[in-house]
Length: 186
Image (tube, rainbow, N blue to C red; front, side):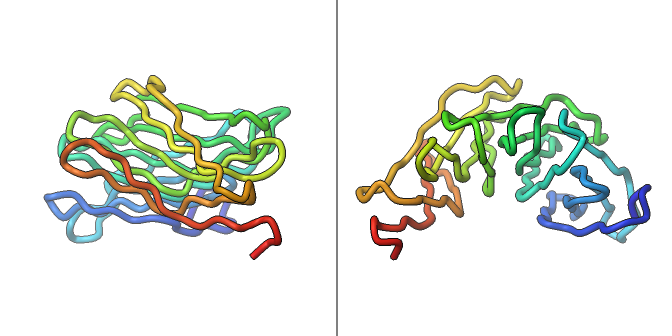
């Protein structure tokens, strides 16, 4: 139960090798990430309230072997309806960095998937408004939260394209899947 005693709901869960459980979700309009030990005892709660002091919605969570926790989703900012927001916490739940992505359309950008590689690079994918329609937008951040690249995908019909899942292979190739609509909306 969050400090506002309001609506709190979970959106993602991950486990580490010691069977600790990490849950993220919304609490009072903020990101709220909780660590439980293997017996279900709460260890810490980390909250993130974006610069818009409004609606922040986490959607995905990952834990790396070093114990760092990554959460992504979307967050309102002044003058911008939604940006990707990715946060890194250390093993004690202390925020290390927060990275925002505002797409070319300066409108609705919603991250839905996240993964981390063995070097601590973070990959985030979701949907980004390009000014006309939605495209996949996939971002790579290094372990310090610096953006390394952004790759977008606009389907062959120039319709709405929505990323839904993300994965990496052993060679470092990034795979994104989702769906596209064609020009007649199908």
